Picture 1 (cartoon, rainbow, N blue to C red):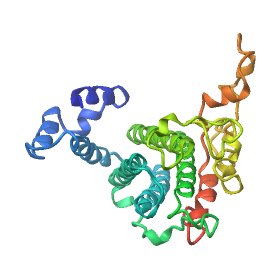
Picture 2 (picture 1 turned 30 degrees about the vertical axis):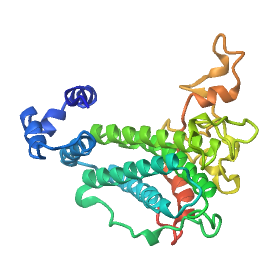
Picture 3 (picture 1 turned 180 degrees about the vertical axis):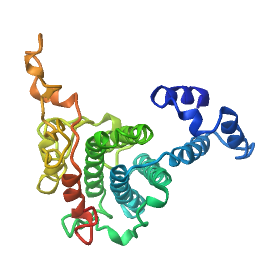
Picture 4 (picture 1 turned 90 degrees about the horizontal axis):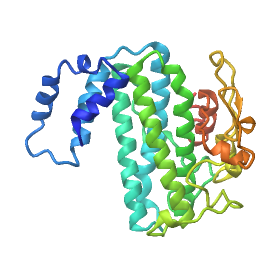
Length: 311
């Protein structure tokens, strides 16, 4: 990890980063206080703790607070889900290790968001808040590897759209926007990896070598969303993840289009020069589409015991 380069990169999007950290000297003082035997593996978490403290000092407006608390609820949904992976059978060691890493990422997202929100954060929900069977729709989710990965893909695909949809709502706070986009990128990596696992099969030791089957996106998806993705892993319950959202109460000019959208920036991509050989699916694969909070909440509430935890 090149710490100075990280500071330089962050400064490009947040010129006030050094003020948040008090001074360059303060950064290294904080690092030195962590002990001389800090391992390379632990360094990212240590650095993250410093930045969490710094960005927690950034004032968070009421609307931004609501958005971040909603994101925090989603992160708890995912974090507890990955913590429950140990009861799932049929996973190769490679895939089990990958899920353990994803679990760590999700736990770090929770920690980071709570650090940013401070006293404004929601109470910590119990594991019992969530029903990963979706009220019986996925009865074997915590025992069967195929079902578990199908739900995992659905959570990650939903998370990617949720963070992109929320980004315009937190643009007033540069620090929060930067963090949200960073988490969005990690969620996308998770989604891609889980899709690879599903393609090759949960017991495969070489998930990256799985071949996508265009006619079977539900069971052998590409590593990225393609059009409407056939409705996702279980179309009866997951098709809304890839469809259009609701523009009701959205800021002017903000639309939540379906994943098969082929118009970007007001330009129909089919109308561009030398694009006649490209399919609509290819155009859609090049862009992610955000999803509004209301639609995300409706989908996520399928996994809420109360049916309204997400609003």
